[in-house]
Image (tube, rainbow, N blue to C red; front, side, top):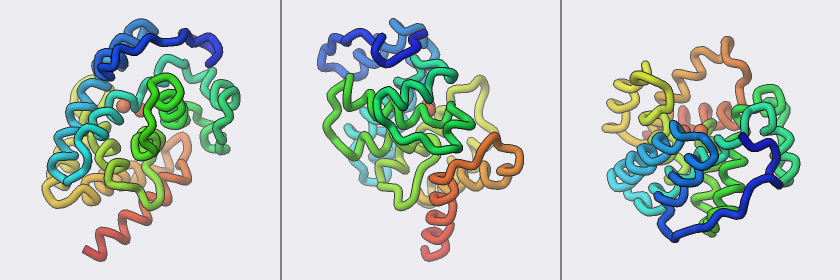
Length: 206
Ligand SMILES: [Fe+2]
Ligand SMILES: [Fe+2]
């Protein structure tokens, strides 16, 4: 595992993002994440087609969303500071969460992504945020459906059912699942709280 951003080798890109990300993650000893991001890319494309989002941007965001897995939790705060990212107290307390921001930075810096929509979706894929865009929600839901743990997620059936109603319903389903157990979570990220109230209101108005 790599301990500082400076240690990252300059990566040779072939122009095929799917292959480039897969190889990058495997080279950095993250074979499980390499498989996971391909599945999330495919799922994000599928959801994008359902809800009129840009399928290519969705696929790319899926491939890139967990590239910061190459940094172990204990160096994530230091790496974030090294590259000038804003670190919130909740992230300091529970560094796993900041991997979304580091991945977004790497998408731009190492993989040459120039689309701010992709930076945004990658940068909030764990917590979502206030006034989330269509692409933010597509990636958020795709990552929850294609989760990176063994077995299938306990909320899978509910989220899949809600996805038939709307993308907001599906995103809210997962956030509510977290919200209901917020007392036992390591931290409640302020962006997650914003997304909870935002989506709850949006769904009520529908
Ligand atoms: Fe992630
Ligand atoms: Fe993920």
